[in-house]
Each structure stands twice: as structure tokens, then as C-alpha cells.
Length: 359
Image (tube, rainbow, N blue to C red; front, side, top):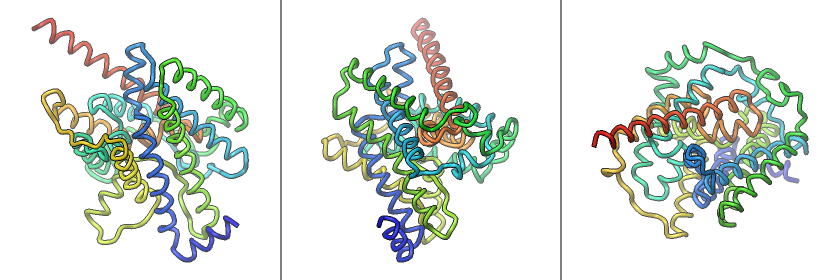
């Protein structure tokens, strides 16, 4: 019944409209849940670096393992096939994942949030996040098609890996998808235990799980359209750098928006976050100030914009969406983001100590 309904929708409205509607729906859910849970990779790395893993780390783990369990569970149930996803099927760059991940991790510490968190915060009235996010988007576009593209391509070519089994962690590790589901459920239980120990509220924990489920929903939605449509439809899920650049460039250069999943996703996340902020009386204008210098945020934005395009995705696009389908380069990029954030925090700690000593 659902297949016939989807076929009718595709025939009546076309692939672009259906995908944009799916992206808008997933974005609304992700944006509202991410704002409610305060989901943020940067915040989680700060806790771990300080050797005090608590609520923010619990939230990140709940999101990650929820996405992994739901996505792999859908594969086991026969509802999803991600073998054609770009993060698995296409040639990948290990050098890009490592260098880009390190840069992105360092950048999100300086900008006080990753690409997804900046978009979510923009919906709450945070002008710092809005300006920083726009710079991330512009640098990402320059890295994809502009003046920075040759440098990105040179770094990406240093160490490549073929698509298919060579880029699929399940195949490389000899694991079945059922085993991965068990691993994810174990991780989810550990995350729940950490949430309980850190006194994470039930509403926050539930919103974190919903945030992860939104990632799985994105994979399911695009796969359903791809498997039903007669046109070639790319399989994707929640990611921000690429869709944000596509949305911005389309608004600037084209009179009509080319509809896609990403075109619906970005405004959906913004509106979902906005609605949650208004509902919880958290919407307020926030600007740059003496304690939040613009130059630091902009440097972080440049590192994130170039790093994300080099790594093949942002903290959510690679770290959660790509991680949920067991893309080798996505996992390498995610680990590199953690390493980059730790390195930048260590640098900032030394700089602060020297300023204190000099004073």
C-alpha cells in the first residue's frame, strides 16, 4: 500500500518535490530534537578532554548508537540497502578523511560548534552561529568548485580507497549486519547508563534518541524514493555542508530552486530548531562580544568549511550518517575530528596558561 502511495506521489509531483518534502520532514524532526537535547560533538569532546564525561557525552553517544542501531536494523529487516550510497560505493579518500577531520575538529572548537550545531543555534536567534555558518558554507563552496578546489583535490589524491567492499567496514571486519545491531544496542545501553549517572533528564535523553532516529529516517526515505523511481536518485541522509552550499548557491544564482532532499533538509532543521526554541522560551538574539571574538569564530569557520569538504562530510554527515552505514572513511573522519578537537583544546590551554603567567 505504501509503495503504491509513493509511486502515485512520484508520478503526481516528481522526484524532486517528494525528496524535498522528505528532507523537510526529516529536518524538522532533527532540528527540534537536536535543539531539545543540545546535541553537539564539540560539547562532548570538551567533556572528554577535561576527563569529565557527562551529559553532553551521553547525548552524543545516544544519538550515534540510535542512528547506528536503527539504520543497521533496517538493513537486517530488508527495508534498506545502502550499498549504492556515495559513502560506500564511490572511491574515497583516506588522506582527505584524516586531514579534513583534523581541520574540522580544530575548527569546531574555535567556532564553538560544528556545522549542524551552528544551523540549529541559528534557529534560536544566535547571530554568531548564523554568521559563522554562512562563512562555513562559502568556504565549503570554494573548496568544492572554487579557488580552494585544486588544493582539496591534491590532498584527497594522496591516499585513496576503492569503493565497494574496500570502503565497507562490515565487509572489512567480516561482520554481519546483525552483529553490528547487537554492538549498537550494547553501546546504546552504555550511553543510557552514562546518561543516568550524569543525571541527564529523561526529556533530553529521549530527544537525543529521536535525533539519531532522524538520521535513520533520512536513509530510509531516500532509499524508498530511489528504489521506486525510474530516475537515478542518490541515497543520502542528514548532512549539512553540501546541502547548505547547494541551498545558498541556488538562492543566489538561480530563480527556481532545484528540489532535492538537501534543499528540504536545511530549512527543515532551522524551522524545527526555531519551533522548539520558541516553545521552550529559549529564543533570543545573541551577538558577538568581548568574550566571543568574531575573528576566532571566522577562523574556525574556514577550517570547518574546507575540512568538511575534504573529509567528505561534517560531524553529522560523516560522523553519524556515514558512521551509521559503516563507511570506512566516515569512521576515520569522525576519529580525526575528535583528535583535531583535542589538539586545538590543548593549544588553547597552553595559550591561556602563557597569558595568565604573563599577566
